[in-house]
Length: 523
Image (cartoon, rainbow, N blue to C red):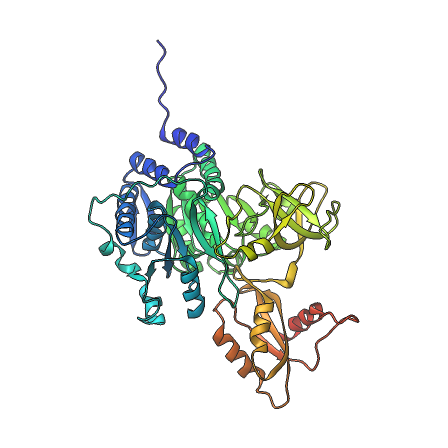
């Protein structure tokens, strides 16, 4: 009789992760049983092994349900990234709730608006933000200090009530950055998150990769999920950095033998510029990812030359739409592009009348994929605005907000952004919002904001204002406006101008303002 082959854990997980739908919680329990003593999470304060992780998540999920969390209800999280932050995120999902991480740089009014919009009953907040916002901030919610999560959770051995997720159940809400009003809540379902990261985790298992991830962008950012949720599904180890710093990132990457990481372009630029970069052993790096902002061909080439492992650029939106992937290490002659639509993704290029244009012609990008948002929380009007419905068959696509063209091999080149959106430090900034804030000032007759290249932030917003007689100086106006804005939105400079440049039909010529800003502004 032939000997029976017993599948190992990686083979079993690879098969489960290739299923059309599955439960994050079930997969995490499988990993904990297979390697209970393996480190799951690390931060500057310590680490948590997989068996301990499951126990802590269960205790926290049990306490959430005991204190009123209902299925589909949000759990708000506000503070710097840490193990405890990750525990709350995972426990909210385990309990049948919805993780709602809030942007730390948002204004108090925005934060209160996001929490209310999310429908959260609980707010987990770290000491720094609590001190900054005061004891009365969101006092109607159950407030739990992130630093004291483990003393708040249910007793040792507690198990949360069973939760079997349905594909359409909400998994998390990611609030869009860079708006002066209440940011829109982008809802992702369990199905979307499974499709998004199950395949990535399965590829790690199939390749036999020991996943040691370094997550150095905030856990409130959708960008970070590539370095957090995918490695968790793969049963790996995630190092969580509270704040990015070149020296500490390099030290961690070398000491941990990091194999997987996600960085935004400005972080790659800072690492390339760091004097001690070449003194660190990064040879364990197998795969590096990048998303969230324009990634220049020159910077991609330098990263490929100086950092080991593959480099994959991801082009998409938090809302979903098309997902383009550029495996830069495989296509060094296509570094000026964002790659081709990934399997399961589709893209069209439309003119201003929403007619499809032929290859090589620039137009407005629309896309769809298996990883689309469920919609904006409580905003069906904004959800509809973000979509394009194909009149031929009624299919719904997402407007990507970018202008691009497709070459003869199917690679997508971005040539501009609709509405001149600025991406600074990986965050979206909408010039119209900043212009509205400038024009709220009594001294300002007219305002315009443009983005220019910044070595520090990737892009940064620069303002121009036509002033009324007797107005304050530009510095005073900018200080007043910046005081009302979130940290990631603030103007780097404000210049006065006698008259806005306009075309013969009265259209504001932002190209001329951008050229002027590049001449005037010195970083």
